[in-house]
Length: 595
Image 1: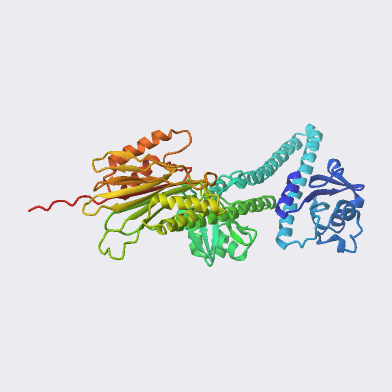
Image 2: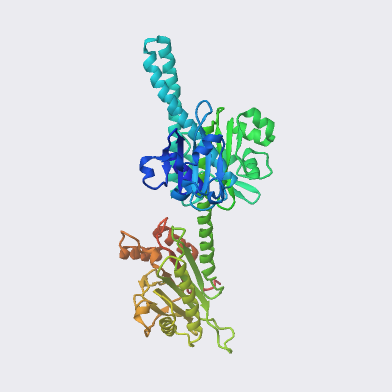
């Protein structure tokens, strides 16, 4: 009985709920939630404090938005002593149809009761009445068995009754277990696939449906959410349904109500030939489609299908309806999370730089997000040409490249990353002759003055062609970042270990240093973030050594392929951190022409 009270409290969002039986001298509360002491411990109220006796007296529901505005109730002790303001009570009946009590929802504030809420309360009251009748019948059965032990035929009948009651009791336990599992399992879901996976295993104990499908509404269509683990012929057959299609699920969506199809005859009589052929092909006979209501709109439909004809009684229907409410909550949460993930990914993609088009040097980049879809990272790369002098037509422009990692994995980190990237570009272009160290020093100075929590690492580099040769020069400044790798055309790989301290507000302005290396034709420079080589339980030096070996072995391949091979070998299938790779290759020496 307490479970029914908890269901009322959860479904109707009220602080107090009763299963109430009205006796001659008191109101007994076999099920309750939210009642204060001493009444909760006694599980009883005096009749003077009972609104449920009005339900018993008239045999009809009692629905009161505000008892203080009701002439009958404004001075009632239930209002003054118990704080009953809003009240909705549905009759509980015994086997002869006599009203013996009520299932009621109570609020401490005025409330306009919605028709759907009262319908849910009525369904639960029907289920509760059935449970009460089961208890009464069980007691009568035990008494009858004692009396009829001397009569063989009567004993046989009693055994038959006991078996029937046992089946009913087991069904009641299955229904209660379903609701308990639904409240626990679906509260932990994170996405639509996860909801679909849990729904698949949720309803096996109630009537044993052969298939339970989840369909999500999108404008004028229903989209079936495919099971991520088990291939199902149902989900291959019809993935999308127009709201105008003559199917039970679309009718449930269009008419915003539960739709029950008891057998094939009803399907043929009420639905289109496409639906009949589909259900025949899938081997379904009985179908129950329940609308999934969110806090603002209809989210979709839950389709429960049985291969054999199945009678859905009042108790089972109320249980399935209540369970669909938990499914709807999980779907609404999943849709919200999926939307957040989509926005985060779009924002991250928008923050990544389009690589410059150039005929002089090969460049490629790869970004792999963290496995946690809620994380939007502070990793980034940047690449752009420096402006040429006015009288330098035909010359090859210098190239600026940057790879950085702002501390954190949230929107704040992404925001700081975008600001740092823009500030570093401005600092570079505002300080000819465009020294990487000068630009980083200016960035440090700006971050120490502005109210920014800038913390992270980066490598800022410049590549210049050497006049009169095919060589290039690399100039870089490293603010605490993992060392870049330089592969020479003969396959040797060196780590560029020179670096300064990382970016951090507590370190203040810092005079950055820069370093130079000549780049032979066909040299490859690789910059990366720590998500590639740093992970829990693994040695970072070992991962860097593996990266060096991969670059040495495959560094002569096209850069896109090089980055994919490195990512596939070193990045985890579900990385804990974002990964950025940026590779630049200087032009190889032109091949001599054959005569």
